[in-house]
Length: 249
Length: 345
Image (tube, rainbow over all chains, first blue to last red; front, side):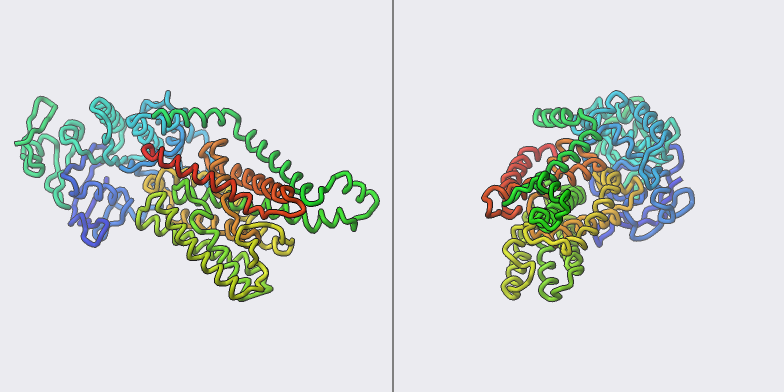
């Protein structure tokens, strides 16, 4: 369980986040939604310990995240940042880097590491691409390679920052279905998504943010029915079964 | 996209050879370069002559004296300087994530040179101080350039321009010191272009220890450099202490470049060319790349130095001049390629 208590923070002197209280339950898919610049990514980075909050506390399983060792924390929480390098490396090589927090000083992967990497490549569906160079792959395939890395990291929690950016429609669905599958295998997922319809369709909990604060948090239906998205994003929402779509007023 | 595909297949064609074999091949290349460097010069040394002198117990013959006091130190100097600058270049390129960076393009060599001259001018006769001073000069310059890169998010080319500016300032410092202290032992014209003509075993020895330690440490860092190439945030999320490791890499690169400059002067371009050449053959895995670059760098310097000795014999060109003739065009080639491939960065 991840808990944020009165968290403030950001990059410059003016904090982006202005006092966030949030609990992310285990085993769920939680999506952070909100207009540009509302602090979604900042919140994700602070919760994943990539950024120090200027005030407040972040707890993982009741213990402040700063009290965990670097590698200890990396064995519990995986992150797929928004800005990713595309080095000349094979898909299998990327996935193997997910084992970094488990390697000893010799940095030599053992049998268990190879096993976990194989499992991750198969679970994500990139086993056939394992020998390919990352630079020669499509955006969706690269994204999956990075997700395979997070899976090989063998953590309970995975943070994903805008995993569907630059993907075409079909690939976006494919990726989100993969995320759903990972969740069903027991992983807690926290992600930032730009697309409201996707957020509602694929999450169990939505956290709507507005100007550095949480405007509302709850199940997709509740959030939708309360009209919070319509107010925050200045759009009109429609619902058709389990699918949602939005139009301008 | 076609450009990408082409370079992809080209790389993999080279890499179809087992990497261990490639490293063995580079070792063999270094061995050949070693022999060539020992033999070539104004007077060609023949192994047969050396052997005959040994058999006659005549170790004071002219041939042996040239071998011992001239060729051997010079050849060892070439191996040390070449491997050190190549490894330093590989480390700097990885830390800055910039394929145009190298000890001489970002001004690290000039920083080391300036401090070397200062130490030699103000504390003459303290041989052990010289590589240390060179190290601090290199470290200060590398940190400066790194902070410029980190704070401003400067592009690759901007960083190289900043390096040229820093080099300019430091070169002015070097010129000032050589004019004010004309008697400084290392402050010859040869120092500015880089060369081994005056190298003695006593000047080489302290630097040799720094370089050997630096090379071993650098080769042990290969795996972590690979993880770092995924980007700072990813590396941190994998539990890596990125600021600490980056500092360690910068210290190592400075140690290597500084020690090389302390006896070889401002040798250019081997720190840029060797990593690129090595990457072509063994790929981007730093566990292979670092030793491969060091071996290629050492061979390259030895061959260039041998060429400089025989080209206009009995006159010789300092190795730095030969390497600049080859390295300058190579750098322009990199700049042009950079422009073309920027879309894919």
